[in-house]
Amino acid sequence: MKDSMNTKNFPKVSILMNCYNGERYLHECIESVFHQSFDDWEIVFIDNCSTDNSGEIARSYEPKLKYFKTNYNISLGEARAFGIDKCNGEYLMYLDVDDRYHKNTINILLNEIIGTNNLVVYAGHRNINHSGDVIGKYKPKPKSGKIFSDLLSQFDIPTASLIMNLSKYKEFGYKYDKEVKVSSEYNLFMKLSVLNNFKCIRGEIVDYRIHADATTFQNQEYASRDRIFTLEKIISEHPDIVLKFPLQFKEAFARADYYKARTHIEKNELVLARKIMRKHIFLSLKYMFVYSILFFPETIRKYIFTKKYNI
Image (cartoon, rainbow, N blue to C red):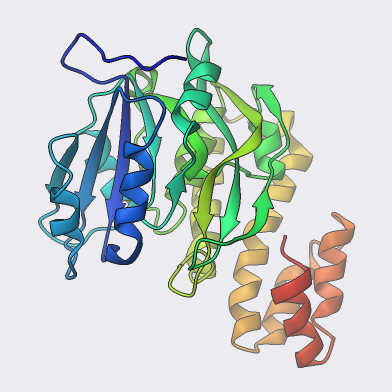
């Protein structure tokens, strides 16, 4: 797709950035958008009451960056919802302030979603460290269509490397749920995938930063609650869906229990962790393995969980 500027007042793509004290990597993040091969975009920047220099850095990129500040610090889901209401693009993308796009990220995703009935298109990403060095890759399996059952078994949508038809999304009526604490994307995209077409394409098109300040795995208990809340919400709205995907729902609830068990493991409450995981040992070999790990010596157990076994 060639560069083009929309003749209307609205951009083709809105890029939503939610920020709380993200000054360390913010210049690099924003610059990765300004260096895109496609330039019909806006950045909608939500300053979630940062106490560092994030606001000043962001405002230096106006007017293509539109700056908004919340009245008080709110959850990520609330911040996403607040930001989406400010987005004017036909399509929506996300970029967290410690990540960065590749030069053709927007082009690649637009080419896969324009002219299709897909609500969401996503891809993989490279993992980078605090210095920006590549330390791994995340490669979700390509698939398309009604992929709800696949997402029940393995939710593999990375927010940083997706694009969503914002016009269709607003027509559909689902929004970020304020009751969800840490798994807002899981909640939203699982609900949307029940009735809408999604597509996962090959390739790593974003750099996703993994560093000591990241909070991805710090809220396991909330992640468990959020997943159960989401699954029960879907079942209440689509009562027959469990009959259609019984094994996939068992896997999804087992994953939620795994997150709950991890909170007990981290507190060395192994009896409680074993009790939670025991009921899933015949679901698959991986859960049987998790259960067996809980009887290993602590040093071996920690090594496996942190280095070798991440389900």
